[in-house]
Image 1: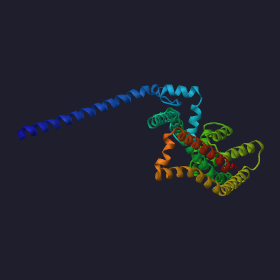
Image 2: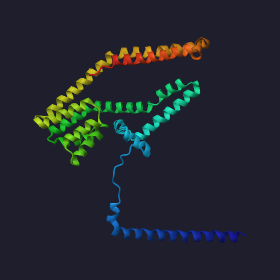
Image 3: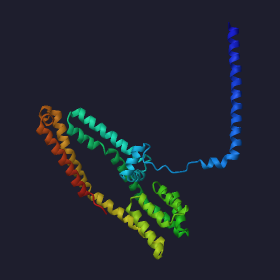
Image 4: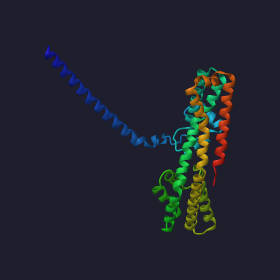
Amino acid sequence: MILIFALLVAAAVVIAVMGLSQSRSAAREQELTHRLEGVGNRQRREEQVDVERDRRYSAIPLVDQLLRRFSIGQNLEMLLYKAGMTMRAGVLVGLMAVLGMAGYLAGLGLTHRLFPAIALMVVVTPMPFFFVLHKKNQRMKAFAKEFPDSLDLLVSGLRAGLSFTAAMQIVSEESPEPIRSEFAIAVEEQALGLDMREALVNLTRRVDVIDLRFFVTAVLLQKETGGNLAEVLTNSSKLIRDRFSVLGDIATFTAQGKMTAGILVALPLGVALFTYSIAPEYFVPMFTTEGGRRALWVAGAMQLLGILAIQRIVNIRV
């Protein structure tokens, strides 16, 4: 019995080795055939390569057509790019739709009323958009924070005798993100034959920073009228730093107002939670009666208006 089992194992090993050798030889023959075919048909295969850029806003054709028809796809794509995110506009719209539907169903299941369900849907739906907007603001703030140092680096390159394009190349290599990538795109556009004016204008379209617009304006005016570009950029860098100093002073002076706003916003919510925790029967009518629910909606609306009013007061633009 053991002998028969050993013979079967040996036969299986021999068959496996023979099959492996045959598969290897077949693979070598197939590879050689492909190589021989490639010698004569290389030009034909190169013509079949698809080098067209994928400009779809969504992988779903219907969503892509809707975004193009209502002209919001391009704006969403630019917003996602400024936020440093790689998702498509269709994905963002899909997330908003899914969250909106989930909010509606959750509100309907919790309250069994149409108006609260719609209100929750309205609150939840734009959350992905606000998140992208927050990421975009963070990226633009990071660009504005590091931009004066990049200007100093650019001025050092100009004073060393480099051309403006070469100095921008140094900035694209030595500066932190997101300045590095944005300046690298501008340098690459000029290397591909785009005019410097158009490359700089495209840079201002990709980056919503007012200091960058001042920089581009100064460079374009210097190219038309002449002058010492290094000195102009040095003055621009000093102006940007002074503006950041003023913004720091404003943040210091408005810190008390912001703290007061936070306390005023949190105080009604804290009092409501405290009252509900120590005397639930006293606060339950706010949810169970029609007048109590209306009072809560009015209080929430007034809270929102108060937040917007305080935000306008403490938000000082320079």
